[in-house]
Length: 424
Image 1 (spheres, rainbow, N blue to C red):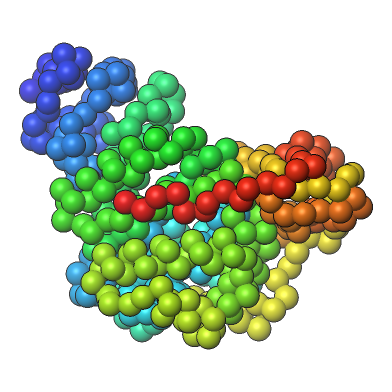
Image 2 (cartoon, helix red, strand yellow):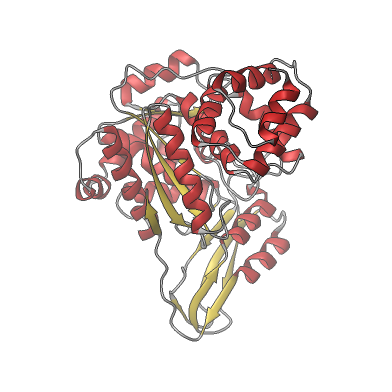
């Protein structure tokens, strides 16, 4: 099929065959199609959508456009994906927890961009931790301790990289099938048999309403089913940051506390829920009580230490990760109840401090961030500390103004919102 006929087909809201999608996408990856033709097709998809079958086929083709991790030798290979949040250090807790409970977690993770953090950046807050491993090292570590997370070293789903850059420049980012296929193509290429999706909802999330999040989650579950994967999705509240810590080294500290059974209630609840869902999808018989006991007993923390050691990290330094030298406490101007902690604002504040990046090439300060002392619905007294800002002078005044605007205190008690909004 000629490219113009393919574009015309979607313009008329007709369904593409898998063969035609493959020819179109792979021609683009090979440099045989100009950007303007692919842009026209992306706009037609944005306006007319794609069927479940088309979306699944597109995702499979994008996943197959580059390297694919072969995890077939592992009976219980599992993966987790978050759609992006603030203070989201879940992978640092969930990965060793799952490995302790019999699953194999062998995945490649990304760096943070914009107001959201990245797992690889957090891991680099651990002295000497190696995020770049060879293929043989990656697989051997998965066999040895059932846990390995690295930066993206392979060329996973290159079609997605090319399409996303084009979508960003042509106002076609907000398309459900294109969002779902972008996320799931990398998950399929990652090779895990069972996947749990943490779909964030709220001010600090990409999806602002539960209806949008549910639609995205269902689209990704459908893609997984069409491609022979076991996929579960959990919709979670991201109106306020997850846990108390926002910033790379600070979040590692909080993740370690959670692995010792001393973590924040919301982070602990989320990790137990995600673990229960993906272990059930993988066919591992366990219960939430057993998962909670694994955290409380610090068994998962021992796995975390083994993971750090295996990737060259300094285990002794885990007790004293380097934080920014300057600290500032923001105190409450009045007594009352915390009614707002805008997640997006806190993510942006840490970015201004140097803890986030505007482009993938930016260097970041791993020791800056914010530690909250109160969460939504908590009581606070006038003069009591609301949070501590860790900084190295860079962007401090701007960050302080951002967090001051992000907090509201009500004279009346606030009803605590649910963290787990829905399980699909």
